[in-house]
Amino acid sequence: MSLIGSLAAKIAARFDDRDPVFYAADVLLFAKSRTGLLHVLLIERGWDPHKGRLAAPGGHVDAGETSEQAARREAAEETGLDLTRVPLHRVGIYDQPGRDARGRYVSVAYTAVLPDMPAPVAGDDAAAAAWMPLHVATRLAQQGRFAFDHADMLFDACRIHGW
Image (cartoon, rainbow, N blue to C red; front, side):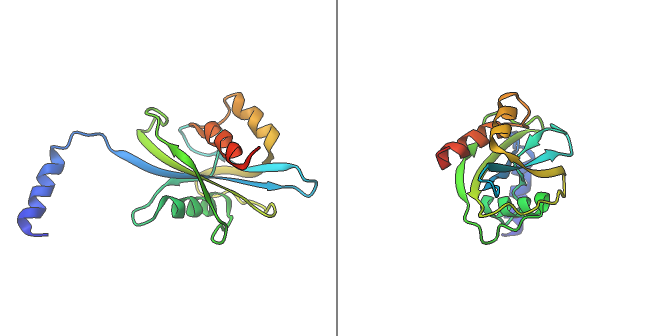
């Protein structure tokens, strides 16, 4: 870009009064226990907003990565699970204005069913990470115990899987 083009871009950015839109990705992971009981992997948020509430692992999409790559990275950071070889399926796009008190966030949610239940290790901004029986998670979601619109993501992922 030329010097004039660069200067023009900087000037235009100063007069851009639009609010920024942030890009996020989340992932809903399911697995059956040895007894066949279906579980979902959830984190407990360690930071505000929604500190202490349940959520799907997820977070910001970094520059240079896709939402699917971000979902895999965030799962690794928050739960210690490596999803490199796990096929992810898109659940939906969550873009309701006001879904996040920090600003305008658009999130792409993914889902997968794992062949087993690897032990999660909470990290990054997750205070805890654990497999929860799906029937318990859906009850807590109905009671408003989930952060943001992650209850909607959970129910949408269940519909995709036919549960």
